[in-house]
Amino acid sequence: MTVMIVSQKSTTKPNIVMILLDDMGYWTLGSHGNHEILTPNIDALAARSLNFKNCYCVSPVCSPARASLLTGRIPSQHGVLDWIRNGSIKSDDDRPVEYLEGMLGFSDVLAGNDYYCGQIGKWHLGHSYMPQKGFSYWTTTPKGSDSYYGATLYRNGCEETIERYLTDELTDEAIQFVNARSEADRPYYLSLNFTAPHRPWRRDQHPPEFWDLYDGCNFDTCPDLLRHEWQINNGIYPSEDRTEMVRGYCTALTAADAGIGRLLDAIDRLGQTGNTLIILTSDNGMSLGHHGIHGKGNATYPQNMYDQAVKVPFILSLPGTIDNRISDALISHYDFCPTLLDLLGINETVGDNLPGRSFLPHILGEPDPGREEVVIFDEYGPVRMLRDNRWKFVLRMGDWPNELFDMDADPDETNNLIDDPEHQELANRLASKLDHWFVAHVDPVLDASRQKVFGRGQLRKIKAAESDARNFADDWFFQSSGKSDAGPNL
Image (tube, rainbow, N blue to C red; front, side, top):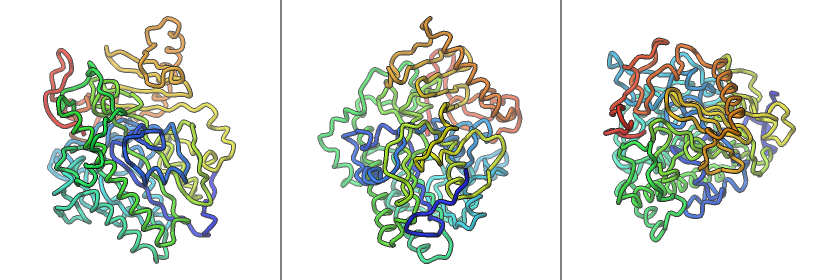
């Protein structure tokens, strides 16, 4: 199904603004019922948009998730299997490495169809200095995380140090972008990639006007549970400073929400709300005490696939075309690329043997027989996940335990049924389905299950099908508990 979607208020291609948050789990949404985290602008956007309750990232850590969203490929097809540890440089010969070199992203296709493409904010896919992937306007952060004050930005190859609050800087640049493009004769695509609510979360990293909003908050939606036995010691798991850490996360998200409100107001003042497709999502989720975990997929070893880590917001707004409603359809970020091109009437693809399927009929409220039985798949190194309308099955290579959860009866994933004799046939059937799916889609050279992916960061591009210990960091002791001794969790 390929149709040209335009707003009822316009006969031109819509502008597109994609707002990508960093580590924002679905559970944080006020529209989902979170009564503590203050996001009034996201809530207002959700109130007039299509909201997906069951959108899953492709891998619960930054770089692989972002690469999959951009290319429609799973990590074992694009080769970004862990967060890129060394930022923009640090390859075998100390030259910048473009991890997705030679692969098309949907931004390449948009640029080839008369869209002016702008990238503002976090990239975290290797080489960040110069425009790539069809982008003509280019402002990026050089690595996965940075201070909110004194951050480094690359603007078309020129390095700058930004003393003001980074979220405000990125927001203001996005507003300047839409203002400058408002009279252009070409539609635009703007990718605004906040670093929020990613760490750092210290009080001195965020404006007091947002920090003070959480005076007296109990943070009941961030449970203080017994530490999970797989939680690694990576500088995130809190002790007496837990409240400050949780407060910093919420503060960063509220500050980003304020920026989102300012950007949407700017688009409205230009009279372009009716012809601007707004997309809001996050690269991956985040646990803040849920299951006794603080962090995302790599907060534990082995990596975890709890919904707090893999389930993300997905909000679509285009007045006059997309109705306001809540959808419980299962979708994946790898479905986004074909869906966007389908929505725009662009009969092109970014590659072969891609796993995603367009869910445009669902967006339009039309029958979608091709998605009657939907199964979502995730992967993070040696850990793979299958999610269908009822069950979540997690397969771990080696001696680590698998998991089976009944998501209808046990949405909090507290009762692992993997050893229940009554569920053995089901577990075997789901394992077979998962195996067949990955066999059909994995590039053998880039197969994550054959690489030593520990969640500590990717050091270089994959060059061979054989597992190479030089590809990934493993700076902890594995002999006993797999607990990390040092380093950030990005």
